[in-house]
Length: 334
Image (cartoon, rainbow, N blue to C red; front, side, top):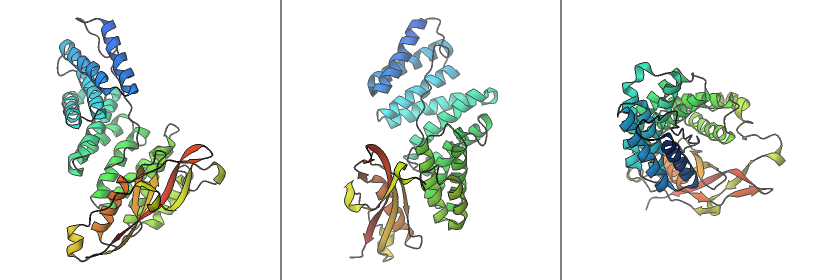
């Protein structure tokens, strides 16, 4: 699944969203403030209690089919997801989505954009079950992003990238490359795009082009976005990305791929080299096999194992930096 590049933006309901008649404005403000502060502090249980109460209040005052209730459900789902309750989060998001769909013929562009963000949240939760659970949701999110924010808006980059990742794991590499390239273009043209988002999507785009055997076509994207992605920094002393070579021995935890039964039955063996991008906290945020002619099952388990590996954070001149490197896996028949 897509390794969440995009920072989650919490659009908490404000007193302008929930205008209760049977409860005081002060109570609503207090609950919203408590929810936001608790979430920011990592106290998800306390944040959940406030969010759940706001759902009850919105339902009571505006009805279970109001957009105010949908927004409150969305906030609750975000917090449930943060505290590890994926099932609860999915239900909250699904209930909110149902409400928005009942209003979709009358949604403003602002509400349409909020609906798209809700769908993206639901898509990320469902993606944990597999691509088939998330593909339709991200397609719907993309439609609402294009309608509400515009086809070239930075917001549209999120569903584009998630769909690109889904098609990547479905082995539809040309479609994946197209979607990632659109996401990259939308990010790069925006002054609001975090550099880490551009870097990650650049690497995922490059991998899709590699798998689709479109390396020559990617050269043009390198000239357009390489420097912005810190891939080809022109001033090494100020670069925030370095190449560490083979990093097997530098891992705090090097996940081992499981030898697939299909590959074993086919008597496939060999070495798989996986290019990785390690972020400032030591997590692998992009993994792409160098080989494209090896057994596809060996390649995929190697890439998935690379994503699960962990490394010590790297600093340069006292600053945390990203590191590119390579993990090497060997498969031998017994």
